[in-house]
Length: 96
Image (cartoon, rainbow, N blue to C red; front, side):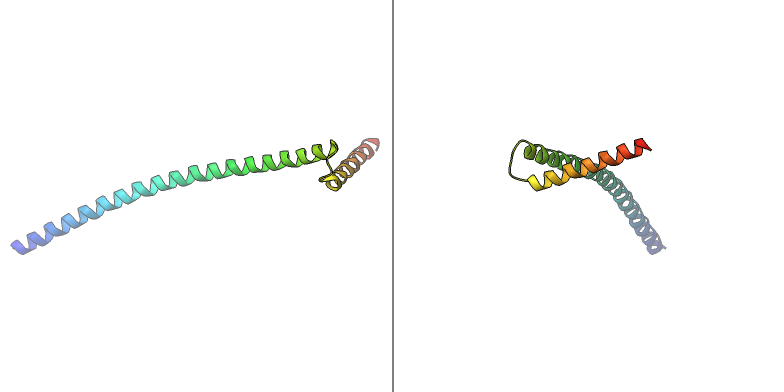
């Protein structure tokens, strides 16, 4: 009978340890999910900043070309021609 009690006690201890380990892992999982959410938000914000900076860079290249810089002149002319076409299209739409 004593052996059965020892076995049951041993099983209870093992189950208790397993439950504690499971709770610990669940807490760790929640912490990691929270950290992942924060990291994804930061990555999205940085991606938006990168896109905004790329737009500013393109604008600065065009402005620099308009000020007389020899770099990116062809690109600037193409951009101006594209803008003129868009304006012409808008005027045509308004005329109708």
